[in-house]
Amino acid sequence: MKVLLIATNRHRRWMTNYQAQPLPLGLAYIAGYLDPEQHPTKMLDLMFADDYLGEVERVVKDFQPGLVGLSMRNLDNGSNLHPESVLPITKEVIARIRLISDATIACGGPAFSILPEVCFDLVGPDVGITGSGGDSFADLADRLERGESYEDLPGVVYRSGGNVTATEQQPTSGVMKPPRLEELDLGRYAEAGFGIGVITKWFGTQTSGDPDRQNLRPIQDVLDEVKDLRLRLGLGKFFFIANGFNLPADHAKAFCSALIESNLKIEWNTGLVAKSCDSELIGLMKESGCGLVIIGDLVVDAYDPQDLAARLDQMLQVCRLCEEGGLAYAVGQTFGAPGETRDTVEQKLDFLRGIAPAVANLRVGIRMLPGSKSADQARSEGQVFSDGDLLQPAFYVADSVKDWIIDHLQAEASSNPAWSID
Picture 1 (spheres, rainbow, N blue to C red):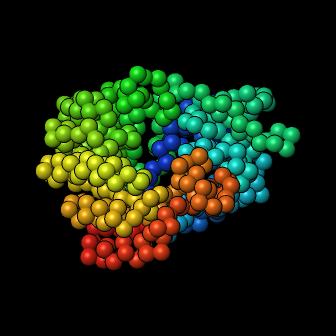
Picture 2: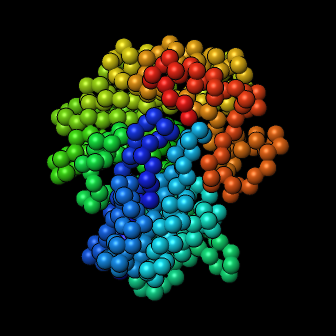
Picture 3: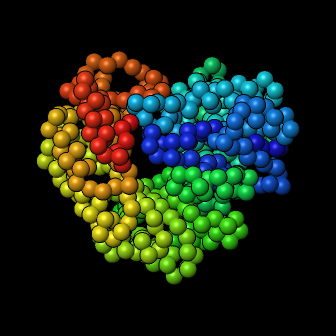
């Protein structure tokens, strides 16, 4: 059975000021789970398509797939001031495929997995897959080819008797198949955003007594993948996907040391958590080719002024380490969280005025998601919405600052060219 995989993400910026055209890495990993002898596979990336629906129609007609898999990377671009949802594009693509093909249509990806049943109803595939999904998607292709039911596969979403049903996901096995990147426009991606993504921590969850050591991918596995991409495809710029590269610190230092010893001479970027960081780690990162780090915003809930001050100080220490080590960094700050006041706003602005980031993103409000504290807070304050409504861009902004925060931040940003407001 022929399988067509489509990446529907067309957002070329994250927020407003970050040029970020992320490679559809998850889709490339899914492709790696398929047996090319049994399932000839083609990938279609809509990021750079001028006429994306026309391109979908052309490829579907030419390739004649029996299964089409669509990856939904994000629900939206994360911006409150300039929101863009990905769902209409996905829905349009599915509708166009239905006009010209009887192929089974499957949806998956991080955005789909947030609220799979509601998302399934909204975009209208035949089957959905939650979580990392590689094994389940490969099994789905096998079963469809044999004419067998897929309803017992882990992490699948389907309609039965008029109701949408989702089966339980399985924990990550700890085995990753190499991604198939050859059909993607790697040259354009290498020049766009932060580099070609390489996963350094597993998707899903693996059991560990230390939460910082959960999901760690063996260092040699990562280096082997980078070396392959470097030698086979000529790639030299990477983004290490880690959800906190510096956690745990000893592993991060060992990774950098191994990268230095490998002599691959690559440029790379990653994200840091504002803790467990020291000058030795920053030095090793710089020596091994790191050019930029994105320091995660720990300051979300402004209820406790003492906690806010402590977290800002923690973040300041990491920024200072980067400045002293000559490592460029980007930071973010969230404004309008529950309990936000003029005083807490000024504390955050004082912090930003005292550092020298390459980019500072000032976010207005918290993106509400099903089950999040911000959604619960909004409901407790009288806002009425369903979980399904949160598939569209929806942000919590505290009433105490709602009327003036945007104008205030824009005025501050006017004299700070590295600041952007979203």
